[in-house]
Amino acid sequence: ISKARRQSVIWLSFQECTGCTESITRSHSPTLESLIFEMISLDYHHTLQAASGEAAEHARLQAMKDNEGKYLVIVDGSIPMGNPGYSAIAGISNHDMLVETAKGAAAIVAVGTCATYGGIPMADPNPTGAVPVSDIVKDKPIINVPGCPPIPVVMTGVLAHFLTFGGIPELDALGRPKSFYGETIHDRCYRRPFYDQGKFAETFDDEAARNGWCLFKLGCKGPVTYNACATTKWNDGTSFPIESGHGCIGCSEPKFWDAGPFYKA
Ligand code: SF4
Ligand code: F3S
Image 1 (cartoon, rainbow, N blue to C red):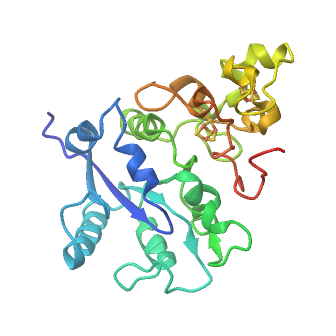
Image 2: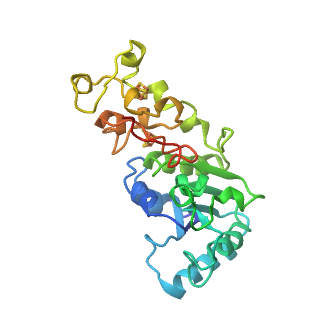
């Protein structure tokens, strides 16, 4: 293990469900242990840091001071603009904590569909006035890593790229790394030959479904969803939603919650 000072990372959690953190703990390459004990210095993270209360906030401020202009900020969750009290941390509104912490950052990584596009908290009628990180931070590079949650190795892969090359990867028009979001689920889906032959399941339990035919007629959003699930898969390459028998619901796309229906009658 190198004695060189590791990259300081401050992880801010706003209106979120902790699913993004749950997901990153399942990364197998690199593992979470390898990431936080060998590659980065995770100086602030509500779920994973040892400190709590005032000591936790002190750790965030100290990391900002010690690594001015160099630290990386990861954000999960949307920012509620409807009321500064919603989701406040240590008496600080999510908006103010984001602005304060982003100021000295080298870059921001927005993980999950809430931080990247507003996500489920922003679903109609958006009761908290939720907005994504990019609506507030305008003067820093932002890498969007959407998904509900994002794929573990996509999150760690983006961090590994930053650590290795010291910069942000090539991004698409929505700020997503092209290496992971350059193709649709449909482009790489193993059920694609059935789609091309016009072989579709009509219900979740018909003969066609049992034979693994295409789920397009059951509402699969794979053709319009950019993500790496069909290639990296989930749980150490075990499976992904379509392989489990359910169509893609487009969880890495903006407004996926309102763009439904998930199911077609
Ligand atoms: Fe495309 Fe979905 Fe059919 Fe796969 S299951 S081929 S992603 S429509
Ligand atoms: Fe999400 Fe579709 Fe992958 S629902 S997890 S992008 S297959």
